[in-house]
Length: 459
Image (cartoon, rainbow, N blue to C red; front, side):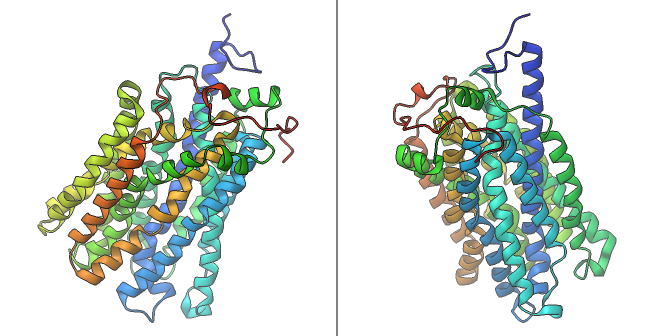
């Protein structure tokens, strides 16, 4: 029987295809859980946390304070990226992925037990901040592993955009799940949602974590990393080495996310503040609209990943960035009609420009880094954007509107993010359909003195 080129394994084509499917499912399930965990906070923060943890503040200030704690989870992402990037490039993708899932899931479970201001005063917000920091660290290591476990099991170079779009698919799928749980919890609990109903979605996460761990235990290490082990090319200090070898790639891959990440959190987080206070829409109407938007993304993301395999990763990403720059003005124009149906349509369509970039983004970023430093490099690039894009976005949007009372200023903010993404993406290399499994493909990433081959139990 013909064998695939699974270095170190000698698997048959059938066995290789089975591992690829398992890897894609494992990566996707993990990002679903990650998105559910993190986006659950995004949904709850403007609806509950402002009142629960900052009752002495006015509504807008309380929202800003709640989003401040939300931003802490983004600040800790690069810390997690460095920590788990080190182990992902040292001991392997699989073991590291199990660790990140446990850290993210258990910290989310813990959020459901944090008491509010009425019981322990400001200490409730302090505890929530600590838990959010830990959760962000777990997410900082999750994305790269989920992407690489799928991408590095691909048999050919022609479908990496489509394959890696599935871990990205976990984002909107997790958002759908988070919205559904919040909607159900709100309906079941009624007036008690603020008192205790909001805690249930966080407690549910422990069940999802158990499922994710079970799936990840059933996959093998990727052929690419196994080859690195066999050739004794494991990096001693992957994070430091990738910063030294490919610093420009880290910066460019971080800034190229500006048009994707910042607007995303404006569309799925700030919309609850703007929708309830300015548009006077109900919470459940907004949740339902975002739910439909996320459902649409489950289709548009893999489509974008597939198209990037055909026309090139950079071209697809640039089309999405330009579209996003213009979409902000259209979006707020539609919202400000104050017509419920038009508002609903605007929210549903809001994530399509985002998906044009996010669908091919995993491949675009991961392909930029050499195999032995790929976990660390892609994690750092991806999550450094959290400090300048994702974390500050709802805070900036809220502050801009509070200052000007003009939503088109937020559209200008989105446009500025798009300009940054267009410039930085244009400077990235394009490895679409090229072999990225060998170090020789990365002339700018030399192999310094390699460490002895690491074992799955060593660091």
